[in-house]
Image 1 (spheres, rainbow, N blue to C red):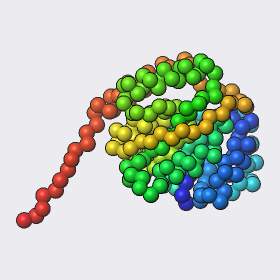
Image 2: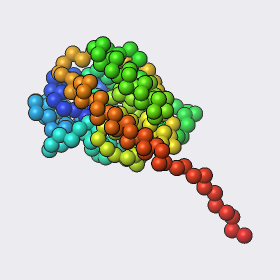
Image 3: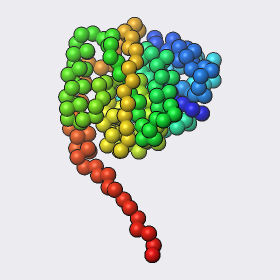
Image 4: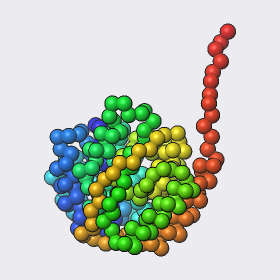
Length: 242
């Protein structure tokens, strides 16, 4: 299997069927893949819609949390269950375009791609969000880049592709998915940003606001900065036996 697609969802009943149909329509015949949807204890009809999709989509696997754990934990549950060496993540609200997944995969696996290219991050250069979300995201990205030096224009994009073994070796904490570029760089890998499409939300309600991301994000930012300052990458050599 070449690729596992992990989609964390919470109360996305309105968008799930069309998103899964679109994703399989893009990838069928291109890659050997699986789709893992992690339902983070949704309280709407998400579970029922996923069961119905599972009956007609053999590549679909559905995991369900007994209680809500957050997006980072949902992603980790999917990555742990995944069978492929490469993981693509996708938001469940339909704003990411599944048609960009092959582009990220091709960038990571192209002949000549460095072996330490562990993460390809989507870059929503043309955001289709409200002006408030665009401004707050732009400000947060600027502060993060200045403090963490991750050289990534858009860490909040849900569309990413990374090596499974690398992700599982990273420090695991709530909201860690927003800091993947900095964490991968800290581990000694390389990160590449690729421009992807971004679509307006047409169904459901956003789970994030300015306040529930700002204050938690500041604490997480300081924590990741602390991790960066504590890491060491020694140059190791072994003496030949005489």
